[in-house]
Amino acid sequence: MLGVVPSPSSVPDAVAARLDRFLALMRTESLEYGSEAAGFLDAAAATLVGGKRLRARFCHAGWRAVARFRDRDATESDVLWDTCAALEIFQSAALVHDDLIDNSDTRRGRPAAHRALEASHRDAGWSGDAEAFGHASAVLLGDLLVAWSDDLLESALDGHAHARAVRGEYARMRRDVTTGQFLDIAEESAWSVNDGGLHAERALRVVSLKSARYSIEQPLVLGGALAGAEDDQMAALRSFGHPIGMAFQLRDDILGVFGDSSVTGKPAGDDLREGKRTVLVALTRQALDASARNLLDEMLGDPELTAQQVSFLQATIAESGALERVETMISDYAREADRALSGARLDNAAVGELRDLARAATVRSA
Image 1 (cartoon, one colour):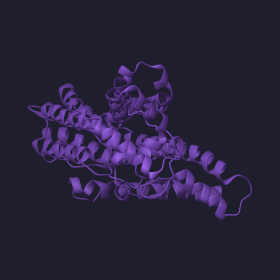
Image 2 (cartoon, helix red, strand yellow):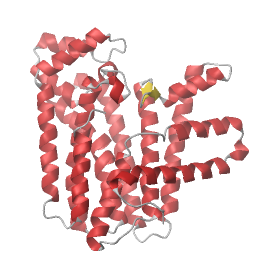
Image 3 (cartoon, helix red, strand yellow):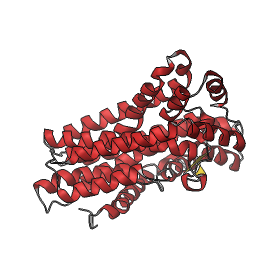
C-alpha cells in the first residue's frame, strides 16, 4: 500500500510518486546502454512532468465509485496507482506523437519533445541534420513511452482478480485513440472531397475516438474494472464518461482557436495554423456563404498565419454562430452525463467527485 491519504487532491501526488519509482527502475535497468541512452530516458522522463493528470483522476474516481459502493472502507492499492500512472505514461506517448504530427513547437509552455531532442543534437555538436534527428527520435520516444505504459500495467496486473477485464479495456483504448488520431489527420485532407453537410458528423467521430473515450470514458471504466464493477455500474460509468469526454474535446477545440497562450502553453490560434477540421470549423463553414467559405478554407492550415489573420478567423468563427453552437453542445453533453449518474449503484461521495471532475474538464481555460 502507498502511504498516502486517498483524496481527489492527492491523486497527482500519488501518481507522481509512482512515476518516480518506475523511472528510477528504468534508469537502473538502462545503465549499461551508455550516455546517449541515458539522455533518451531523460527526454522520456521530461514528458511526464506537469499536466492535469486528468486520466489518473478519472481512473481513481471510477475505482472509488465502485469499490466504495461495495465497501465504504476500501483503500487504494499499488495496483490502482500503477494503472493511473500507466495511463499518464500512455498520455505522454500520445502527446509526443501528436506534437510531431502537428509540427508543434511547444507543449505546456516548454519545447515539444521533438524540438527538445533537436536542441540536444545541436548542443552536443553532433553532425548531420538536427531537425531530422529530433523528428526520428521523437517517433522512438513515443514508442518507448507506449512500451513503458504496457510494462507498468502488466506488472501491476500480475495475479489480479480482474486483470482480464482491465487488459481488454486498456487494449480497446489504445486502438481507439490510434485510429482516432489517424482519422484526425486524414480529415485535414479528406474534407475537400466529402459533402460539407457531413463535416460536423465526421469531426464528431474523431472527437469520440481520439478524445472522448480515451480521455474520460476509458480511464473511468478502467478504474471500475479494477474494482470489479458489475454490468450496470460499467454502463453508468460509460454513459457518464463518453458525453463528458465529448464536451472535454469540444472545449479543447475552442481553446485551440481562442485560448490564451499564456494559459494554454501553446500559441494562440494554433489549431487554425495546423488546419484542424474540428466541429467548430465544420459549423462555421455551414454558416458562411460560398466566398467567405472559400476564404476560410484558403487560410486554414497556413502555418504562416499572422496574428492579424488569426484574429480575422477568430472573428469569422464567432460571428458565424459556430462558437455559440459548440458552447451549447458542451452544455448539452454535460447535462446528458449528469443524468447518467442519477440512481446509479455508485458511491455517493464518488459521484460528487465525478461531477466536480466533469466541471473541471468542461469549464476550463487550459
